[in-house]
Length: 154
Image (tube, rainbow, N blue to C red; front, side):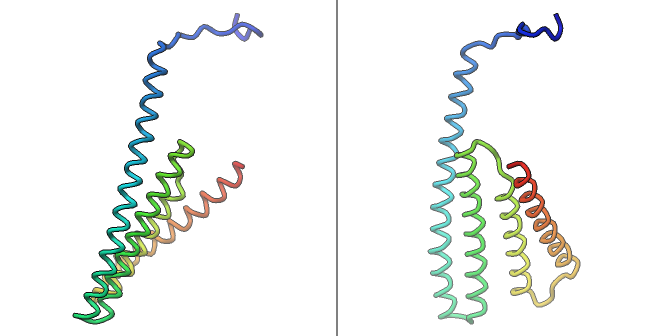
């Protein structure tokens, strides 16, 4: 009977090993994500130490502007890595992929590129700069849209 009240529809039965395999794969995925998170944290620490060392060395051998520009580049890269670690942690907690950290990573990466282009190049390509600014606007619009969408779901 179609649409019968208490009768269960016939479903093909899944083998028991399939459920076990899915559980093993989910556990392995968690371990891999945790290892990636730890490796990213180590990378961030190395980038910070390297950035500080390079900053001090460049201040002593060249001008402060170049040293500050290089340090800013490293620190923004560390911020990107930290946001990726944050995304990995959220993924481990909720087993869902959240869009907002990826948008923040993209936004920081574009801002990093704008700052580096403006601080290191004598002449900036106006077309490239306009495209980068448009990307910032798109990322900010995406953040606003995702924030509003998440609020309406709650």
